[in-house]
Image (tube, rainbow, N blue to C red):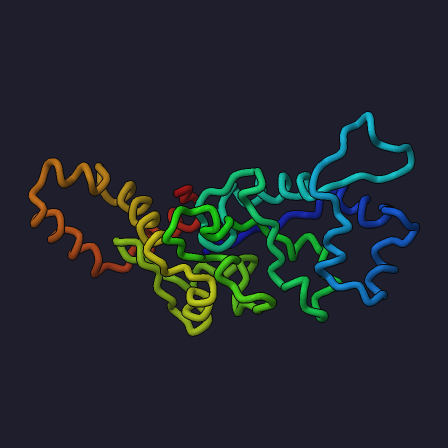
Length: 239
């Protein structure tokens, strides 16, 4: 997990929040005061953009599609939790860090700083599926660490073979809640790390060295804490 430098909320999003109407004149502030849940409130924001020739004068239009486009660029096209590459389509998820389904976070449903982009958590994977990220997170479950924290990267270490290790109790807790230690993610991290550590990836090394020599080298590196590689893995890995 890497630190996400959250920017200012898009102007069009803020304009929509302030002035939108959908079948009534109630704005969001008035809706927050009703018994509507955060999950139902979220559905007020359309999923897709509306074509220009269908827009009515005086109405502010915005959509989840436009919101996703802003956030995914801000995150560098990586998942806010596992850091694998995500695409700007419906395979990526608009994630509420503080669950909008919990009453105490209802007023953060449209808080830009509470909305991130995550991967689909293995939902699209072939069987057997192993869930991770938001898919592995229990409904309404709160997390002990946020990718918005400037010190988030200090809670984790990585080994040469892609294992993620919690350096703090909170780090270990979030690894378990988000399933960040499943083999799929370890394998992807190992590939990214080896692309930096070795001149050739592991598969190519085996073509030129004996398996015993390659594994011996792997064991040497596995005993190191590769802090110099953490920045690469966390900030720029697109698995």
